[in-house]
Length: 383
Ligand SMILES: Cc1cc2nc3c(=O)[nH]c(=O)nc-3n(C[C@H](O)[C@H](O)[C@H](O)COP(=O)(O)O)c2cc1C
Ligand SMILES: CCCCCCC(=O)C(=O)O
Image 1: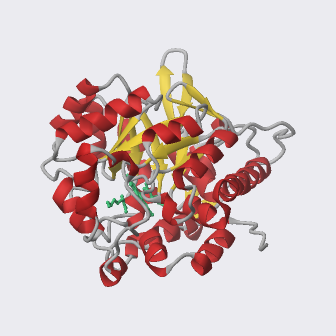
Image 2: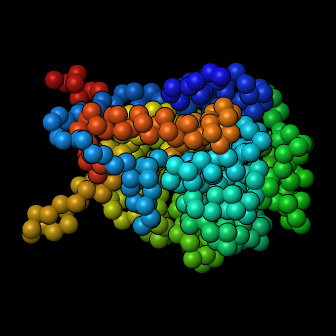
Image 3: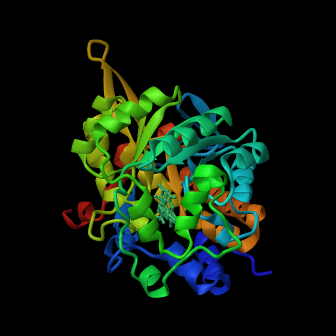
């Protein structure tokens, strides 16, 4: 079998083996796909400034997320309908996350139920991504089920009052194949959700069922439904980041939904410094969008780092840093390669790349990755 050595290799393989409708759904961005491309281009414009002779004989990639240790600073972003890539779908990716000691975020629109994922990967740190439905009973039920099943956080996606127009999905009249179900909606309410889905594209599903009337106060109400920490995913401005802090969320995911919502929003990595600067250490900040290599993880961690002066008198400074970077599509490419083993391989490739980059750059731990170790390319043209 073809042996991938980098995430690009997994992608090339997936492009060959996935059916056209699935591949187009997974890979597409909105509109002309400018933001999708820019999620990558923006990373390529950043330069790493390595440091030498720092005794990097022992290294650790571990980090702390919401008070819990994670073995890796990168995890699995929520992506819908993973059984389109492999029959084991979300079970495979959750198990791979468990094996590698990293975080797994399950999509509301999963093809495996909350309970089945929990049973398959009991020791993984699992978070549940929530789309808020017009029917608040459906929403409350999802939150309760995630809580009872041992998920450790609710990640509310706030960038999707309507879905971005992904042109290939429209051209393909993309629908879920009949042998696959939206597994969180089997049962009374679910039937109505699933039935509406069949025969209509995803844009129609979202328009008919997701709640476009959401406001910040709804996030406050959501907090009353659960004891789990609430995170908001899809923040792209400092104004919204500060609003999220004011409402009392536990974390913010800086994300442009993989370029799938508004074409021409900035790359996630372009937005990160503005948000870190505004929010500081008030809440945890995570990141996704365009991560395909360990150098991208390194760059995001560096730009997410912020020096915070704790005790001005003693001049003691602590560095707060973003503790997790998430990936969407690379996990789907891993699934398409070989289910659980494929996703594990994707995570392992990235892990060994990151160890390599950190070691050569003089970093023994994630907290050694400092803001001044990454600069924009214009830094050098000014010299
Ligand atoms: C096929 C696909 C399905 C997705 N489904 C969801 C979803 O159900 N919920 C959600 O919040 N984000 C979803 N996303 C967005 C991802 O969580 C993440 O923000 C994005 O994929 C990150 O970009 P990357 O693919 O470049 O890593 C999806 C993305 C893709 C590509
Ligand atoms: C059938 C509902 C579609 C959900 C889509 C999930 C998603 O967020 C995406 O970007 O696609």
